[in-house]
Length: 431
Image (cartoon, rainbow, N blue to C red; front, side):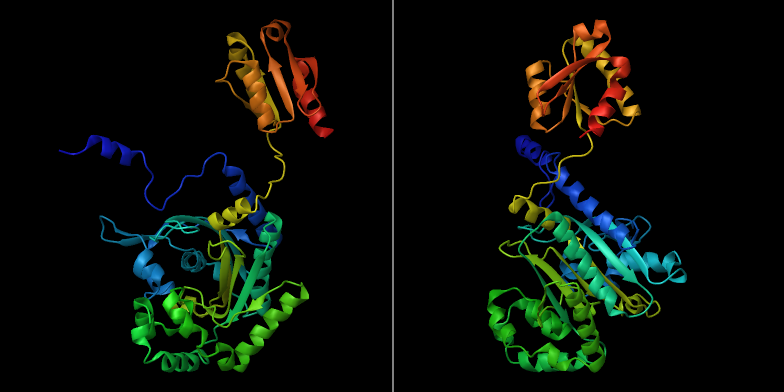
């Protein structure tokens, strides 16, 4: 017989690796999204929203069949019609698909595109890793292979960190070369690791055969000694790739953006070429908070025409975790500054009309209609940081008046309901 109590406990629990966003946490999410959208608009990025479900093939071909994302982490399903779909594990291949499908390649180039939303990866849940995660995503697609856009994408993420007031950040930059110079380095890397298979983790043994560059991305302790002594990628860059990297760094220097060159930074997707980068926060064990790079070959991997592209994504959960860990205070709320307090059942009923009247005038108003005592409602208004409280009781109902109480100055005044909107706007304007 099934244990009904155990089934009930499971029913009221969230699936492993997922998380709720509670009302108390929402201001952090709103702040991140506002900062990201404002910067996207400032730098000329248009908002693109792609569906959560895509054909699985686009990630297998784009993200890479040998990547951990596709091999271990992608959620797939088969429709009744036989199509194999995937919950998107990242944005970039889907954004490239939309770029082609909607003819954005025939419009002004490059196309700058901003996206935000949930992604899904079947990872082992831990600090900074969820099975449903959210990202802010910036892509520059088409036009010339211009290093200024590599720099601009990194600058945008630096500005996001600055605007969120996250401190102790570090930026690591690398170039992983191109089709010409990367094979030379790969061969040297394979020769170095050959004979060490018995000392490597199982994943690295596999990577040695399928994707040698990913050996530099290994986090397992037993592989770190060998990784530290691996050949230097910078030594094998061709002239074009070296020049490209030099230009990117010169743009960063021009704006005094601090960075560290890391010749072992490779990122987790197969499509990257030349520039790759990661932002992290010192002292926080949550992984990188943002990262990206150039992917000039991705469109060809998706069976399209060669198309230069560069982009990056910031992990919302990780950025917010950094804000909370550093106890960053959010800017004062600018929306709802007015709190309506009722006293008595009849006043409670009539207060609904007042709320709707203020809403129609564009005045944000909150309330605690489920609470009866004046003291409890005042406490809520004060705790939430509201500036004005409107007190509406039996006496005010019969007199068609209302009390406006300034919670910051502890002053109050009775005004006619007919003049309420005018009085509130006047008081808020003076602040």
